[in-house]
Image (tube, rainbow, N blue to C red; front, side, top):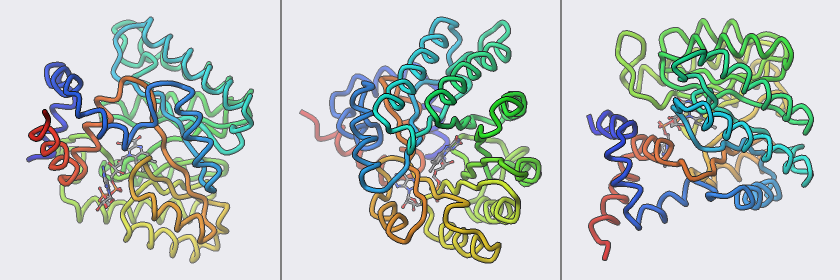
Length: 309
Ligand code: FDA
C-alpha cells in the first residue's frame, strides 16, 4: 500500500514540485545520486574504480514527450562517453540508458526516434571502447524495449538488456537472451505493476528471480546479478559455481549508495562488482523509487522534513 502510494507519487507533477523544493531533500538525494554535473559524476566514477568497482553511469531523466529534450539527453550521453574515453575510465565504466528518456514516448514516431537515438549512444560507446545497457521501465514498454534491443544487437552485439524477475513473462525472456555474447541484467523490478502481468508478493518475486537466474547462469551469455538481497547474492554465487562459471563470466551489480560494504566484500572475494551510478538534475523519479523500496528510507526522509527549520 505504502509502496504503491510512493510509486504513484513518483509520476505526479504536483508531488514532484513539493519534494524538489524542500531544501532538506538534497542531502538525502546525495546518498543515491553522484551530483548534478558531469564532472561530479566523473569524479565519483574515478573514486569507485580506484576501489576495484566497475560502473554503469545513468544520465538521469525519463518519460520525455519532447523531441528536443530527447536530443539533449543523447548529447549528454555522448559528452559523457567522450569524457570516459579521454580520462581512460571507459575500461571500467559503461552507461545505462532509459529509452523513455531518448524518445520512446514521443507522440509521433517515438519508437523509431528512440532506436535512432540509442544507436547514436551505442556508436559513441563503441568509439570509447565500452558498452551500453538498456534499462527496463514499466511493463507497457517491455515489448518495445526488447524489440529495439534486438535491432541494436545486430550492430552492437554487446548491448545489455535489463529483465525484471517480477514479470510473469521474464523466465521466457531469459531463455531468449541467454545465448552467446548476451549481457542480461536481472533485477526484481521497481515499478507498480498489476497482478495480471507481475508477481505481487516478495516470496513469489524472489522465487521467480531464482528461476530466471538458473536459466541465465546455465546459458552462454554474461549474467549481471542486480540485487542487494543477501540471499539472492548467495544463491547467484552457488549457481555460478555449479555451472562452472569463472568469476569473470558474470557480475554483481548494486545501486550507488546502497550496501557499499557488501560491494567492497564482493570485490575482495574476487568478484566483479558494478555500481549503477546516476547523475543529473532530473533525479525525482529515481529517488522516489528508492524511497518506495525501503520503508526505512521513507521514514528517514519524513523525519528530516518534519525537523527542518
Ligand atoms: P530488496 O528490495 O528485497 O532489498 C534487499 C535488501 O537490499 C534490503 O533489505 C536492503 O538491505 C537493501 N536495499 C534494497 N533497496 C534499498 C534502498 N532503496 N535503500 C536502502 N537499502 C536498500 N529496476 C527496474 O525496474 N528497471 C531497471 O532497469 C533497474 N535497474 C537496476 C540496476 C541495478 C544495478 C540494480 C541494483 C537495480 C536495478 N533496478 C531496476 C531496481 C530493482 O528492480 C529493485 O527495485 C532494487 O534493486 C531493490 O531490489 P533488491 O533486489 O535489492 O531486493
